[in-house]
Every structure is written in structure tokens, then in C-alpha cells.
Image (cartoon, rainbow, N blue to C red):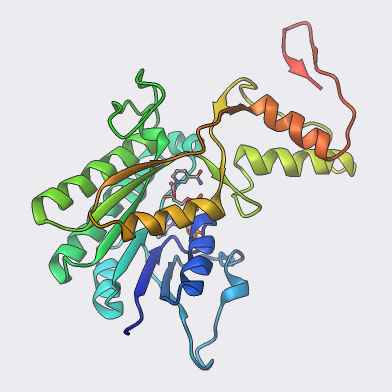
Length: 285
Ligand code: NAP
């Protein structure tokens, strides 16, 4: 049987690296798109890199960028994938307030560049869009499911909502197999270091080893549903193996606060602590 070919935009990110490993194990030929960068950006996939002279290669990297329609469409034409995973994004909510137009371009319009290239070249290619629980934002319909209203509250959330609806529209208008995975937070040792999970672990280890004095965080009582990225990429694959294209919420169903996370890391590191409040009411441990 002919091997399935996966094309991953965002291969150098947390999910892209786990998804590549997963698909290689499943017997896929995996092609990943990396951006040109002045410093190395392949740290998460270096362990699966295969050089051009290796025999029986099943992992290939190409330069490309979802802000560049020419590269997107020529890559799809050249690689002829059976499945495309669009994980490429400016994925940081806080940063999206600093670079809103860029976030809209990458995390929003990038998706229509991919979908339109698929429509023109081969509408039978299956398409996965990395949507996010951030599209629910302030929606009152808790607990959220696929029918909940969307009320995003950040440039990242609005860009991703554009991608969500674009995916739905291409599915309906052109009968394409295009699905959204509306994923809640998922973490791992490969998560970007400016996200709260990694920031907490790295910050507290640095305090323990005397490299850092304090770890400052925002709202201690902000709650998140945190899963593991390795399990969530399997859900991404399963979404494309479903008989029909559709949209799916992926979550663990359990919420923990930032304070719970900090408590857990402090315990794991055997650091004795007690929470106190300063004169302004700010909590510290
Ligand atoms: P990530 O680690 O930030 O990875 C994002 C990937 O997109 C990186 O490979 C990045 O390349 C690439 N990228 C950024 N701009 C690009 C561009 N213009 N053209 C091509 N590639 C570009 O994110 P992640 O945690 O793996 O998440 C994967 C996807 O799921 C993202 O779309 C994210 O928004 C979404 N999502 C994530 C979560 C979560 O909790 N992790 C939850 C819901 C949805 P560089 O390595 O060069 O920066």
C-alpha cells in the first residue's frame, strides 16, 4: 500500500515535533515546513532529523512561511500530501497584543492561503486546523463544547476565530475534508519558555540553584485545563481519520489554577513554602 504523506506547517513547534514523531511511527512520510531564522529553530526536531544522503528517509524539512502564498502553494504542489496539519501560528496570547496585525496575518490569513491552495491543487487533501479554546474567550456558555458561542478577547483569539470559520466555510462551500481541533492548553517539556508552565518550572529551578531571585506571575487564580501535548497530537491525527470532517473540542475536563501549578512544582522540588500577603495584598511564597 502507498504510504500516506503528511505535511506539517509549524513542525518546529511543540505540537509539530510530537506530531512528527507520532506520524513517523504510524508509517507516514512526514514533510515539515520550517521558517528561515537567523538562529537555529529546529531544537525540538533535531533528534529526528534525517540528512539528504540517508537511506529510506521518512522525514523531510522544507523552508516556507504561511505569510507567503507562493511558498505555500508550491510546497503543496511539490509534496502532494494526503493530509495537511496547520499548526503554524504566532501562538502567544500576550504577544498578540504587541503584534496584532502580524498575528492576524500568520494565525488568521495564513489559514486561507493553505485552504485555497488545497482547493486549487487537490481538494481531496485532508486539512487539520489548530484551533484553540481562546476562541471561547468570555463566552458565558460554560462548560464549553462545540456548540458554545465564541467571544474571543485577544488578537490571537480573533485571528484563530477567523481561521476556524474559514475552515468551516471551505468544508461547506467546496466539500473539502477540513476540520478544526479546538484544543485547550497542552504542555510538555517542549513548550515555549515564555508560557506559564515552563516559566514556572524554569523560574523555580533557577531560584533553587541561586540563578534567579523571584518569579513574578500574573493572576494566581486564573484557571486552565492543562493536558499533555503528546496525547493531544494523537487527537489531531484522529480528527483527520474520522469518517467525516467536523469540529472537535479536545480537553481533559479538569481545571487547575496557576497557584495549583506553582504549589505542585514547589512540592516536586521539595521546596518548603507558605503563602503570605504583603501590605498591598499581593500574595507571595
Ligand atoms: P508553538 O510551539 O508556538 O509552534 C508554532 C509553530 O508555528 C512553530 O513551528 C513556529 O515556527 C511556526 N510558525 C510561526 N509563524 C510561522 C509562519 N509565519 N510560517 C510558518 N510557520 C510559522 O505552538 P504549539 O504549542 O506547538 O501549538 C501548535 C498550534 O496549536 C498553534 O497554532 C497554536 O496556536 C495552537 N494551539 C496550541 C495550544 C497549546 O496549549 N499549546 C492550545 C490550542 C491551540 P518557529 O519555531 O520558527 O517559531
